[in-house]
Amino acid sequence: MNAALAPSPRPSPAKGEGASASSSGAVGRDGAMVLVELASCADPAALERWLDTSKPGSPPAIYASGLELPRSNPVVVMVRGWAAARLATLGCRKHPDRPGFSQWLVYRSFAAPAARATAPGSTRCRAECVEQRAMLALLRRCALAGKSCPSNTALARRLKLRSRFAARDLFNRLVAAGAIRVEERGKLLPRVVTIVATGKATGA
Image (cartoon, rainbow, N blue to C red; front, top):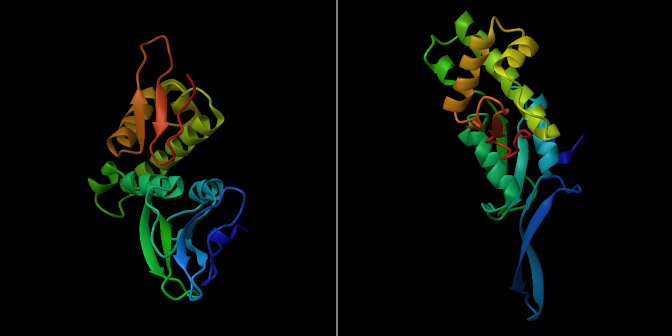
């Protein structure tokens, strides 16, 4: 299991192939320049797998660790995009092993406008949340594979929805929630959908 995703009370960011770190020079006691690691970030591919497989209430993932949060790091930008799309919430805690260091956490969540407009805990609220999560996951897979965005009819068939109009409504709710962006290219060409959380887009 990737160290960034481990539910252990003392996990550390991944140092895998996709992990990244930032450093700064400092002068030691003898006057020599020493390298101080300011922060390190988890493997973005591992974080994306965590987002795809985790559920609200699952253990959080550590996406960064260090003296300060590297806000311009692509991993941090990606995770903040998840938060903007309401796919996740973010947190921070003291590093259990390194005084003065912090760990930045990402927690899985999902909040849709339709759910907020419906009584909490209602059957309709739960059903719409499940359907929107399923559609977003399908669109994420298409974007990751570079495939074209399915039509509303194809979305309805693959997600077992009532009709293409039900698929259209769910799709529009994802747009309103800020989870996806859409580029319409006319009736003869498939629309291009960008997943806000990852920046990946479906094929043309």
